[in-house]
Length: 257
Image (cartoon, rainbow, N blue to C red):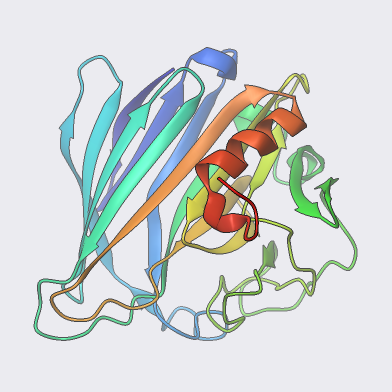
């Protein structure tokens, strides 16, 4: 696989091509937005404006370095690398200002229409989360329909305040883990996303999937590290889960990494 950067106004897209994508293209709106507390009901008021710029890129498409500058003074540097079947994200958020930031989370938006072969409605049946110990295709009942922004569906983990998630319909169902994904058009491959810390899972309105990353505030002068992965693998779900368990042991309390 290889990646490239496509600027778009004051943000842009990480473009993923090759490998198991079988001619498809995956676009990652990176980063779509950053939000403060009470984001589920305070939309768009909780939005923290930002810009993203390309710092450096490998000429062979194997890595990118990006910087997000938030209007409240926070800087987030992202190092994105590609391997045979995974995109790896390593990010450092720093607050060099003299005042605390209340930035709660950020949203990498992964657009999967080309990968799934589906449109705004038909792609939904290709998507999955994990509920009650098993892969569960969408949609799943109960399906929430009311929110400040509709449609879409948000799943909040137990460790996150339900007020501090995407402003779209919030499911009462709690996912087993922080993995969300989809099957390819021919059902032979899967794509799956995970971040640590993770804030929520989200099935969006532009044929997109999110595993939004958590920041949960950044005091003046402090920094935090974040990491994420997008897997592109054969449709071997036990194998995918084993890789996820090794890469994100924090999401599996009580089990050895």
